[in-house]
Image (cartoon, rainbow, N blue to C red):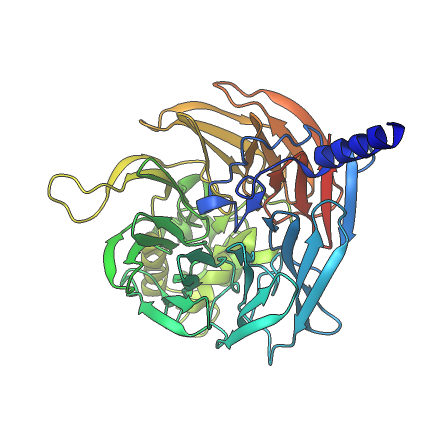
Length: 500
């Protein structure tokens, strides 16, 4: 009897650790979970504090990367990049133990250009419950079985994308959908997940108002009914899944970074643009005023050196990172483009062209809600509401009940009503710095992870209610995952699991 009690106790303890979950419940198949909503299964009971010195369950070292975990039952799939060996790595990690079950590497012919806070291992793997699919912008798509055997690979050319590949692949039926939007031939690619062959590829039109340097997309595609929707710079594109034929295009002001969220046929999106908020850039004065106020040597032209260094083409004051032009792009650095006489000064006509250029790149971005159901005979969606200020750049919104939550750089949390867009509250959570990871909702709480590793847990409601704060003391760009009684957080060089 004692032996039986011991076995039962051990089994019960194991269930508490791993979680007594169904196949569907312990499944986080792609970036931000099912259809990228960022909402954990109802049975997930993660800890309210992520303290490495207090409730760390396990920690596994990984090659550097910013991809998020993909989970199926007791298997975690994630990627990394070995800088010394120049290899792109796919890991399979044990959910309960944190041990690496297998890892496979590929060597690209060359590496795509990536952002300084990005990585060649940026995209999150996706699984259909029998295989795992990985997409590297520097290599192509790969398919492994759960034992790590390579089933197929499809090499793809490196895209001409300003900050590398960031949008993660998703699966629909027999198709692996890949965001291939770039500055030359932007497309959405569908691959047969069984054999790796191209099913269809749809090329997107380049919006005339957009310079090609801006025509990118770092968003993960999302599924709505029989269509795939992709967020790219200055628009949303909808494509029919069956054959890749275009459905509709919806114009927005955006740089195509964050992944949208769809709830009850309403799409919510953070549409950020570097010159989208007037308070984040400066207007230059008319030529006569400029000469009167800043012509220090009285030569009747505007010398480049006379343009105040603090005048910004755009600024991101909340980033608090040594990123150079990403934090502040001075107008002084833009001005030489208009110095046609090459004398390090701008005359009346040259100054006018600079002023015109700045005016033409002034847009009104916003957090938006879009009704995807066609109304009044229209063959494309309609705008429900738009909030023009304090727009998050990288993180996706989080929709909980009749509220939309959005975290932006600097640690400002905004809450809107889903139906009207009315602001419920906007407050700082006292965790400043950049935010790249998208928020996670689990067991009645919102988890917010800053790039500097600060973690803030908030109780949803009509006012800011901070439940806990902790510090991972590492950089975090990947979005967290909550399943069973664990929460997974991928830092720059490790995967953490915290439990109660």
